[in-house]
Structure formats: structure tokens, C-alpha cells
Image: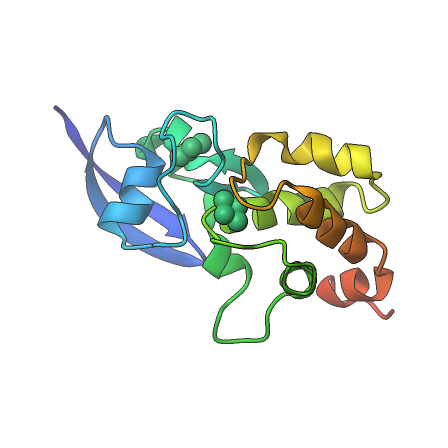
Length: 167
Ligand code: FES
Ligand code: FES
């Protein structure tokens, strides 16, 4: 199999890697770059546990080859909310609502929900559910997740602070 040298921009850092052309972005982020916040679930584009942001859009990292990510900005959960700092307000809402139990799905759910909040800050519960349809959760029954996202959307001061705007 042909190997290609790539420069991948992940969480504002450039990584030089040699990859086999059939390696997915998930393979390279998780296995080669050692990023446990990008998780293997189904590995076939169904569960959403491997969600990352590609140029600000949520994508399943298992459904694209790593070579396709060159020239794009990849952000993982840790790049979106650094665990060494305060949790993101959306994460706080998840904690308050018990919207994360085993946590396996949570990285993907958070990144998808955060994108929804930017795109559609007045989303209804149905719209929240629709947006999260590609992020499967085995634990919560989804109610607590939708509650947490709704709490965040209904707290405009937190969203304004995230954007660096005056509340
Ligand atoms: S592991 Fe990528 S969608 Fe399931
Ligand atoms: S919290 Fe366990 S799969 Fe979602």
C-alpha cells in the first residue's frame, strides 16, 4: 500500500506523519497521534463517537481518509475545551443534567451540539434531537442530553462569553 507524508493541523498544532493511504483520519488521530478523545465505535459512520470538527463542521473521522484532511483544520474535543482549564459552559450543563454516564459518546455529542449552538442558537427540542441523530448514546436515553443542550441554548450570556462578546 502506498504511504504518503502529510502535514495535519490538529488543535492548532502541525503534525508531520507518514500514513498508508487507506488509513482513516480516526486511525491516525487515535493510533498514530495518541488522541484518546477521538474514539473508535462502529468505524463505519453510524455511531458518531469519532466526531471531530473539520473546518468547524462535525464529521465522523472514520468515514474519511487521513490524506483528505491535509490542508484542513481538525479540532478534537481536547482542542475545543482544554481539560486543564475550566470546563466549557456546555460541559457544565452536561454535568448538571447527568447527560454523560459512561462518557463514551460524550465527545462526539458535545462537538455536534456546540456546532448546533453556533448555527442555530434558538433551536427547538426537535431541532436538537434532529441534529444529534448521528450521535448514538447507549446510556442516557437522550432526554438528559437534550435537556443539557437546551439549558445551554437558553443561557445566552454563556454563549456570548464563548464568542468573546459582552453579555
Ligand atoms: S466510529 Fe465513526 S461513526 Fe462510529
Ligand atoms: S453516556 Fe454512555 S454511551 Fe452515551
